[in-house]
Amino acid sequence: MKKQVTIIGSGIVGATIAYYLSADPTLSVTIYDEGIGQATKNSAGIISPWLSKRRNQRWYQLAKAGAALYPEIVADTQMGYSVYQQAGTIVTRSNAADLQALYDLAIERRKVAPQIGEIEKLTAAEVQQRIPLLTNPQPGVFISGGARVDGDKFAHNLLKYAEKRNLVRHKGKVTLGDQGQLMTPHGQQNYDTLILAVGAWLKPMLLPMHIVAKVRPQKGQLIELQLPETWGDDVPVLMPEGERDFIPFTRSKLVVGATHENDQGYDLQVSDLVEDDLFASGYKLDQNLTKAQISQVKVGTRAYTADFAPFFGALPDNPHILMASGLGSSGLTTGPIIGKLLADYVLTGAHDWDQYQLPIETYLEDAD
Image (cartoon, rainbow, N blue to C red; front, side, top):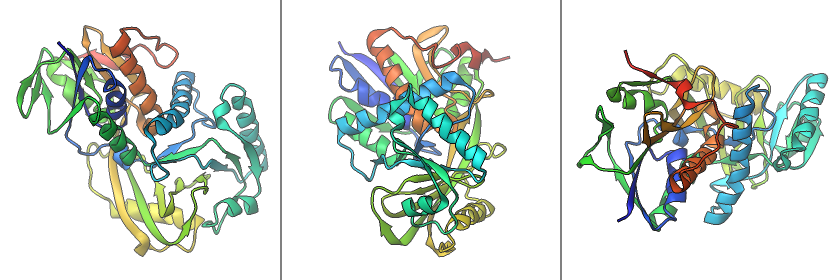
């Protein structure tokens, strides 16, 4: 009899788990998703962790591994440029000393992360040459390994790929009982392994089991603009100093964002004030933009922990229930590697995750 693995959540983590597990014919893999507020569908999509100043080395090792995994998955599934483009990243600094320090950091990190690729220090004019949209460029550091990904399309393609092998998908809200019983729109469902890849919704999902997941929701908004001009696939992502990220996707789509709103809970309403702020940030970089070019505003809910670090693994008292949460604004970078690590654990029963995270107990506590 096949082992039943059930995944809750079809974002970047859940989709990656499904992609890897569906290749095993000894498993029966099912995924449920409500599809509301998913961070994956509403993320800016920058894959470029190497110049981060975050001091958490576990996070950096995880993010570095996640960025390195993307080209492998993309090649295996034959995803096109509309999903993932490794066109490089430019990080700008107005101060010459800061720019040199950033360049030196890139050179140092490339010693153990060759995925960074080529590294160049660019003048403002050279930055504008790489990103012709800019009317107010600053000098920056270019790394060729940086990429952009359409998280929604990436997860969708992984799920479609998995469905052709061994995945069954269901829509609808699911809940847990006090002993981990899985209640679905089709009634109670049995499982051998349950994987909770629900992001910021992990806390309410675990409460019936009298477990508190120490995660909080963070609202993120971004704007997409459709521009009259077109460009090729080689325009880099811009991570500007003091402004929102500026992400030219293929042809004529420009993304500006995203916000980090800590006091909005699970609210998914578009804010006119935030839309104005995002447009103003983009306008400072490209004064040819107009508000009429805004095609949509996307809103999602990220999961954050107190130390801004993700966590994943099995419930301490129930090894049949796995989870992942707390990925924050780098979820598209760390999500695939977390999904792969959890899938490997399901397949082998072994793991070595200490290099990537603190013990999972750090992020869980008994409910009062």
